[in-house]
Image 1 (tube, rainbow, N blue to C red):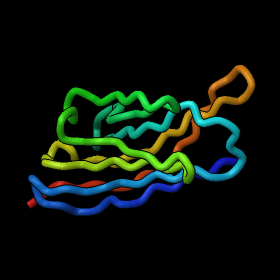
Image 2 (image 1 turned 180 degrees about the horizontal axis):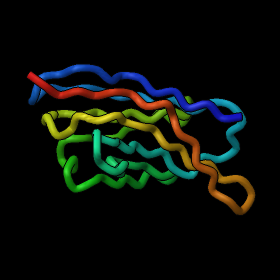
Image 3 (image 1 turned 60 degrees about the horizontal axis):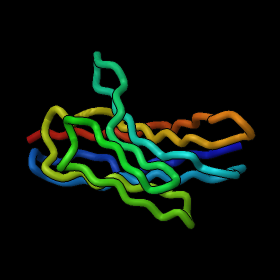
Length: 119
């Protein structure tokens, strides 16, 4: 069993900042990558940012330069620092953890945390 717990969402004014956390626990042998996705009402889920076990990061075009990933590998935790937030960043943010199991990559999802950017 693998548990994914997200925290840090909330309501913020445009231009403000929030920091999301995602912690993975349970039967984890090897984390391949940890990612943040988001889904706004009426839109498809999109990749926000991700970091591999080797430390390589990837950001969506709409957040590059405003959002930043960091991690604590000892705690299997990844953080998403979100700065200069815009109303269009409003969405439910989901943590996705890719775990290597033998020759497969298994995907685990958190329950999501709401981020609302509004004045």
